[in-house]
Length: 481
Image: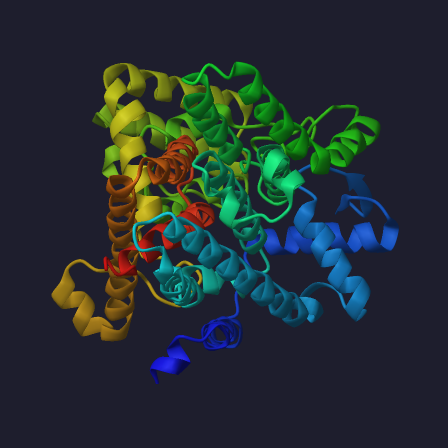
């Protein structure tokens, strides 16, 4: 039995079974899936990156082109489109996700090689591979037609190259390279490669360059204190060029087709000239931090009636404020379309609420959103309610629902606790490892801080951080002697 669990193929086979279980037992296609499928089909059939509006094809930049390009490739290879091709999409995504597990395990092993007992790197590799392969959160999204799998893979690969760069700085290249040229130029190769991998990830998730920002901060810390400004500038420049290379064709396309130089998708995912309800969004930021509220309020905007009773009490500081919101919703519900005037009124409410309680808007609610995206039970793709309180009532109504919810929550906590534990062990053992820990935790903190500025705290947005979590958690299992 021990031999089976120490074999790479066994871990990958178990991971594949878990992903297929989610695909066949709990198939799910979010609203965004239909948009990606339409973009891919139009791109393949009409050679235009566009959506259909009133029967006409309209070129857009609503979403980054990476995932539609992947779907279009699958459609071309299978001769099927849309829902008919989802099984093929799922199988390829499962393979890509398992590839990300291998890269993550490799990252953990590279960290282990710098530790006091490096001969146990194989143990760390296998344990991390099992942790990553059997994570239900990432495995579930591998079975969903969405961008997460590719963003996770590119992030894991970029982190591996960046940690290898740090390894080179600590003198570890002798054990990595046999080529004299590679030994001399490895920093430049790693910088360019990491930037390119981040650029590839940006084609799927537009916030991927946050990892590049975290890396630049670390570059400055390492090389500026040594007085090597030009060397640091070269690494920053090479990584920036690497990131820009995959994005250049997209920017050129947007300049030619849409008359705008746009390397990323629009922040609010809106079409050119489309009204953006910034006042309403600012009002959301003064009270919204739970995923449940997204379904009840903002995701209904311009599509469904919004009921006052669905808005939590924390959205109103006074009865008079609640009356103002009720009046605005009554106007909105007449035609289920928010007007500029209504949006301005919500914006005024947001300014008043922020002026009364600035710490609530700029500190306490972002902290609550951070807790939500990291520790909420990740059951949004599963047929469970997520209700816990009151516990006795929840158990009486559906014990399986409560058990899954609490189990998923506990697993979220366990991953984070083990990552902190593993990071602490690395930090205290060697200064070079401290730099790697700084990169991983710096990225986790930077991405989390960015996500707290968004109106809707979706837990799936931190799945991209899980390669770092897994690689750090795996360090806990290295024997000390």
